[in-house]
Picture 1: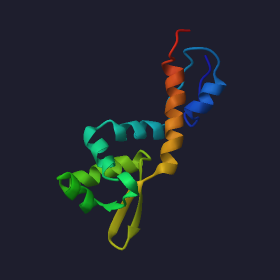
Picture 2: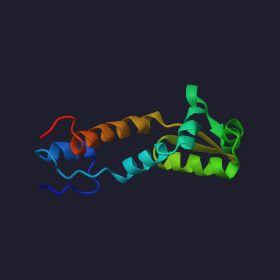
Picture 3: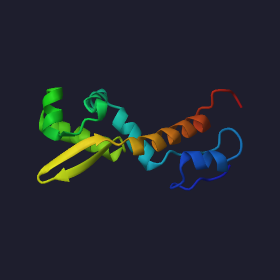
Picture 4: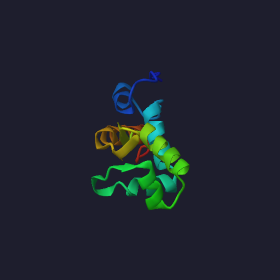
Length: 122
């Protein structure tokens, strides 16, 4: 069995390893991506960014009816997972969906699922 280096993406690992059941580990970024999506509240948080909205923590908290500290925690996890990007303007931080980061993570997830859980038997 080939050992895959931790920095290798699942897509690269799938190409590098031969055969079924090869040991492929998701990258830390993919794990953070999945953690961001693992919570129903964070999924709802993502929905407020539909249509390309760019929002502050306060706006997100108000729209979801949650406290600012809770909103801030969710936004931080979503940003760490590559789902949101942020920019600072004065004292305000604005968040928006990070589409450029999401697509490669989805590709890595697809590759990982093909290697860890292939649709057909080996």
